[in-house]
Length: 215
Image (cartoon, rainbow, N blue to C red; front, side, top):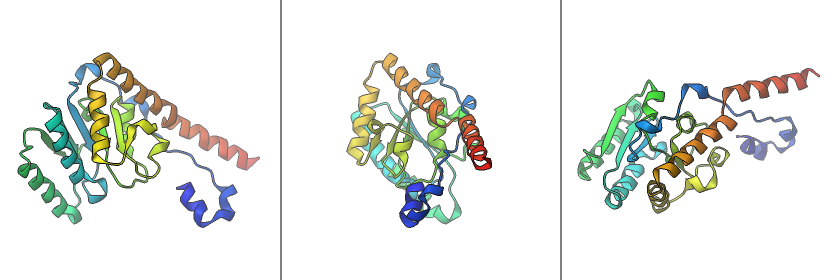
């Protein structure tokens, strides 16, 4: 957001400060014992911008290479995108994924929902701030993301992809790791969340900015 603002109003760059929004990290916990190693999930408003249709297609190809996987899709659909939701349901039927994919609708208790997810996927083509990705990181899910503008501020480059083949390669590489190494990667996600998006860090940054302004 800062880059876009400065591109339009470069003379005001010195007036800008970026304070990342945080979440309550302690509401989300890593629960390795509850994870099967087969569950891939995404949580979002079901709309074209989230590219859920494309995710289902990529998952279909992935499931041919790695049997036993299950895709969990959480999130509600706004009436304006009802036809998009219908298209998703039809795609699942045409690809015979009924036993490999679950739609949850609105998820009101995300901390509980994330406990079953091994790999979280952000497949959007753009985001302002994706809270679900932040919550997944705090929950210790292994997170990968389509390279939408700004996601590199949250995830390391090795977790980002552009194409479906890159997505599948990253998932397969992770799932083929020994369980103990997978846990290390999950804990790394949790650690990044604690270092970057804890709401207490946001509070401290706001306080510092206000103190500087007062001075």
